[in-house]
Length: 148
Image (cartoon, rainbow, N blue to C red; front, top):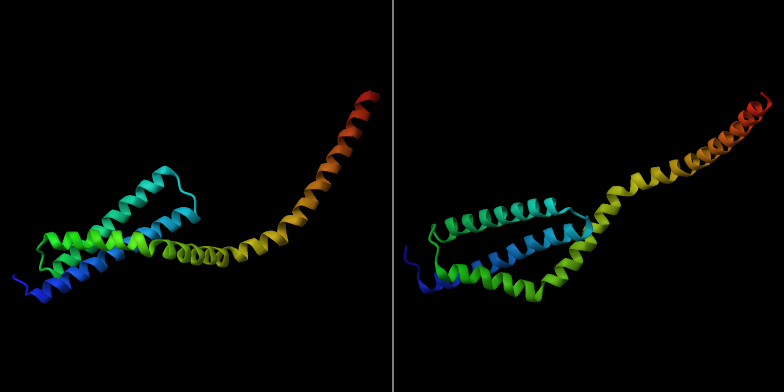
């Protein structure tokens, strides 16, 4: 289908925004990698998930907005949007996303940390007493053994 000039301009701007959205999606994965340590295998699985998700978004966008046609300026727009995003907003988004995710993880882990603070000191005290009791019993056992 032939698009008028304003339609092509709108499509180009939409693809630039799509490229920026793909950049934001990638930054979400980058923040998750920074906040929570991952093994190499998990990173590879995350990369596969990212690329499949990005491909689905781009395919759906091309299907709906461009009637399934892949136009060179659409691909250029996606690339330009991602580049512009990574050169301008990426650092700010990474900073705020990492803070939000860290706060969320703290909020989620707060009950567990609270319970651990309640349980661990008495448990350590109990273990110290068991250790001392074990030493006493060991001395008694050695003393009995020497008598025999």
